[in-house]
Length: 454
Image 1 (cartoon, rainbow, N blue to C red):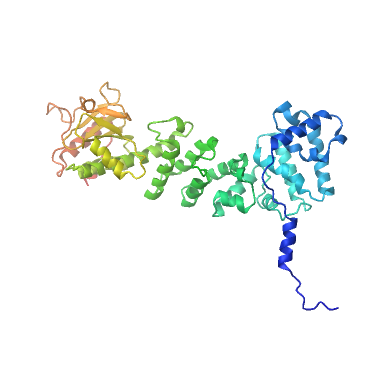
Image 2: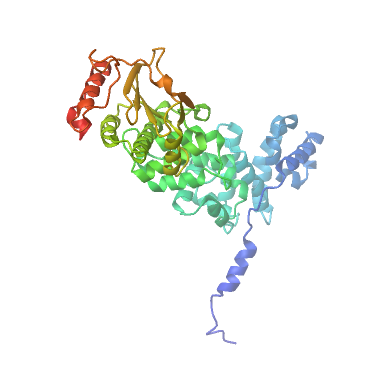
């Protein structure tokens, strides 16, 4: 009989056969329970390894690090026997060696600890096991083990991070595509991969691709941070690349919104910022200062302050030159209502101003050791040294208006009874020149008249 003309490839049958050969790793079992039962088997026969069932040998990884009775760490001979005799024998004699590989996979991912010498030894054996041609490579985890060098304690996390980032998939989607279990994303190994990604070079960490990946990877479906132990590294990774460069408005706004949501305002509550570098915090405070100034001048515009543009030019010049260290606003009821309408994120903090007109706004600025108090509308500009008993504290939740009409340092060279500065001759730069010279004399910051008025 001739078979000429019959198809030589049967893709559907091939696919079905491949499916039979493929073993999905599936979800982890109750590893503690299995580990306890395995440990009990070894404790019952500590010197008789021949009496240990194959099933218990297969589950040895679950029993190593359980806390009860010290785990199998107290029977090192059993671990050595497992690694050097039972595991190689499983590759040679077992029809489905992948069953022996599953406990190794789960322990490696869920107990990942590259600083533990025994863990590194077991990882090396796990790597050799999955690289063996006797382990079918149709399983997704086997493919990952080989393509990402998954079980190398150094390269595995780094290559996994690269694979997730370049896949253009969400973390959940990446896990599903590779037939991993849902809790993989919160495992110590996944966190190590995340931390590896956080160490990308600064140029890449300024990119939209990096920010998009980090925002998605770092948060759970509930919107919480996925890895609480990595929160300081996360904040540093997002902020430090911008120490000497400014992001565009869209990126800056996204970063501010994300960080204020998950860490709070570092000017007010510092607990969630504990451990984050001071350089990183300064970057964010600088951005918040800019947002605060911008909001203040928008409020002045909305509440009919006749010289808001001149105030904006003056203070913005000092801000852009990097001279404003802190900025805070106190708002009357009407001014506060304007801010709530303008601030779509609802994250910009302010203080309530009591005992003043409802449309009144006050901008508090710290430059060096001097606090400036810029009253809106017909109010004066006042200044005082931070160590003065009448100097207002920054970031209070409310201020009595009288406390912000403190005795000012002299802007007027003794010419007027009140040493505070009236905003006179805005169009010709009258008050601006006097304030500029005051700052130059008391703080040592030099700006030209043209720089603060144009």
